[in-house]
Length: 260
Image (cartoon, rainbow, N blue to C red; front, side, top):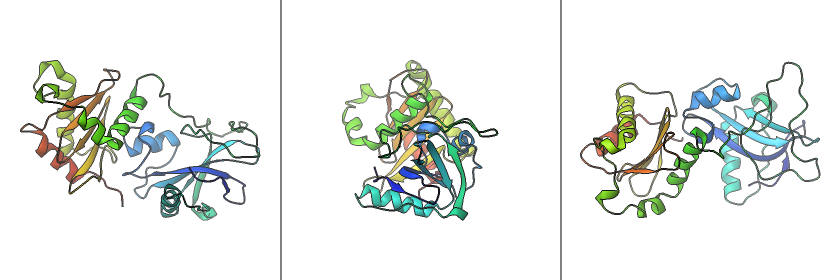
């Protein structure tokens, strides 16, 4: 998490920032890039946005959307390395300042009042608020998929033997079969941007993140897949490679969006 800094003439004390692009966006907010943009009241431009979350001098929560994606990406990279970076988007790059935060933060700016939503002004949208991720549902399902992608080796080590794998034709796993059928449909009828994302993995493999209505799938192109379903709270289904999965993953990787 970055050190709190004064970001611009409006005295926004920056707490953190995230990217909002077709290839990288907070999964908890939606299954694809257009869905997340719609929830924030932003147009789903291909170039994407950077979201800067902070507090004003009164402690009110604000989310600033900027078109300067490169600036935000540089700030995030610097913060991840433990370096300071003064994230100050130019006024001409700012698309809008949205009341509230779309993500839960455990930090606050020092020497200002505790975080709170700004007083409502006529014509302003309702303050942004994080999705409810306490009870199992789409937000928590997507967070679970994020965790598997980040901790792939740990999850992979839990799968022992063929008996642990769900198979597409197994009646005991109709949900898994539905997910694979819908994912296969993406190959011939591409979904909205962000439904299929590809990121770096060890070796020459890629990590795939695929989402759809009520489901998420995380896979390695050289290995297996894991499926999470809205209708099965807390359950994670490993899917063996078998004869079909390798080809499906290869085809999905070809149409996936990738970080620049």
